[in-house]
Amino acid sequence: MEFPSLRDHNLEGKRVLLRVDINSPIDPRSMEILDDLRIRGHLPTLQALEKSKVAIMAHQSRPGLEDFTTLEKHARRIEELLGRRVKYVDDVFGAAAREEISKLRDGEILVLENVRFCSEEVSDEVTSKPPREQAKTNFVRKLASYVEFFVNDAFAVSHRSQPSVVAFPTVLPSCAGLLMEKEVVNLSRVIESAERPKVFSFGGTKAGDSISVIKSLLDRGIADAVLTSGLVANIFLAARGVEIGAENMETLAKKKLDGQISKARELLEKYGERIVLPMDLAFQGDEGREEAPLADLPNRKVLDIGVETIAQYSKVVREARVVVANGPCGVFESAPFALGTEELVRSIAQRKAFSVIGGGHLSAIAGSLKVAKSVSYISTGGKATLSFLAGEKLPGIEALQGSRKP
Image (cartoon, rainbow, N blue to C red; front, side, top):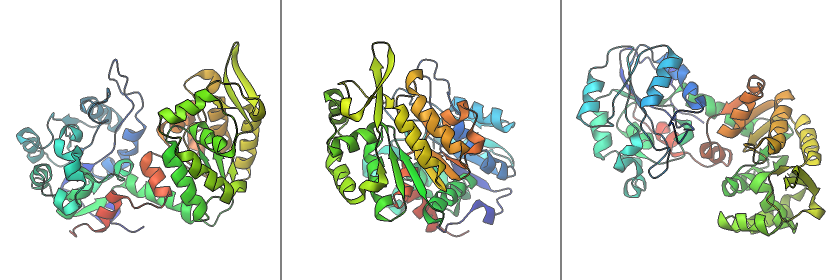
């Protein structure tokens, strides 16, 4: 996938608008940042721009959610991690923001306010338009006139067609930052590598997205084995006719995932031997964690895969040459039901294969188990990673490919 890279440009002394994705888990009571993985991911790009005048554009959550807040604490965290002073202004493109951008000197960094405080960034009327039309917003016109170059380092949000992602490359010379480049290189290797077998593990709650990716990977002949857990496994088990219990079926219906069962059934009919389903499952019993085989499941909420399944999945991972995991195997926040996810991550880390972990949950577990360095690559993307693996075009990358030349 070809696009202009930061490595191809000398931006020393240039006024640069840098789009990053530092959207982080936030404690809803203290509003403190709980994990700075995404912030740390952008440090190489910021270091590469150490002689530029940098204005950072980013978001935190979205309107209506309890972690939708300012970027003041993000700016302080960047300052701590980078070891350099970082300014913050509680304005996106107004007079205060533009004045601070104009005052930047070489080597200085300014964090603008949460870009999603700007209605033009989140309006369906705007985001449904092509990038050149989005560039006509006040937000883009005013900011673009105060900078000389645009760098998109925000892979994790590049699946969205929003002004801060797709509009600036139509009016400014632009390129990808080092994190964006790293994400694309590593995820492309997953898809294009001749190494076999390729094993994918899908769990977590984004089951609809995961099933779309599974279909694409199987249809394109990329996946040799797909391990299923969490809601993804529940959908496939129901599709196979396993009685997973009324409570679990109600959960699928409540999350509007029951419509995925027919899609899963079609995949099982076509690729059944490549889709690996749990042999046993774990749930909350009278005395803590209890497990049962598929033929004898109680009508209780599934909270993890069972030990026989863990052993089976570990064996499949050990035989892989490429391993990709997205989403936890169960309710890992509860210690008794973290077993499946922890053992999956351990197996991936122990295997001398090219390995990619996607999503914040698995990366946090890899960190807590102190095995993160044994994983080849930890992707910062959530939905963007899934979209890329599914072969979908990412608007943010397409925008860079068609960007204005310097």
